[in-house]
Image (tube, rainbow, N blue to C red; front, side):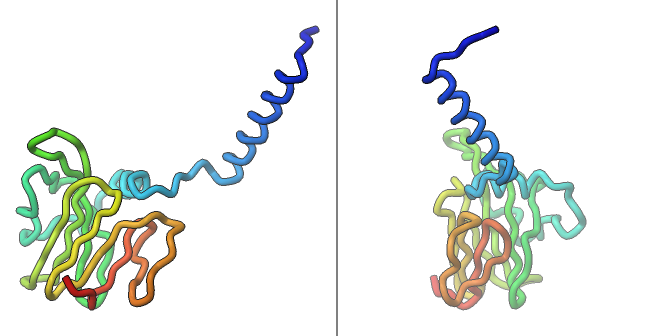
Length: 152
């Protein structure tokens, strides 16, 4: 029979409590980077094809990885994988367009604090899934809020 000291038993109990809590939360992270990675890992559909107006959004854009997030008032939102051509660091591109031939804008880089805004497209911001949505903005996904009326 193995005998454990009181401190060892306390650590084991604490580890079991932590493991139980993770099980109850389904081990789902709510940070924006994880949310975007999970979103991009989904099987692509025809709606995910990046419109030609957005394919030149940035050097380093992986257009084949693009996923359609949604549309609000004729403004469409996409995300894709991105690799910084200078540094080689991975990231994401957030692309916004008033399709088919309207204005577009994008931002590529780290998911933390990612946002873009432009005339005719309004604004889009990456947030964490448990963040509050400011007045005037709409949650389009777990990681994206949008406001077609936001000014640049």
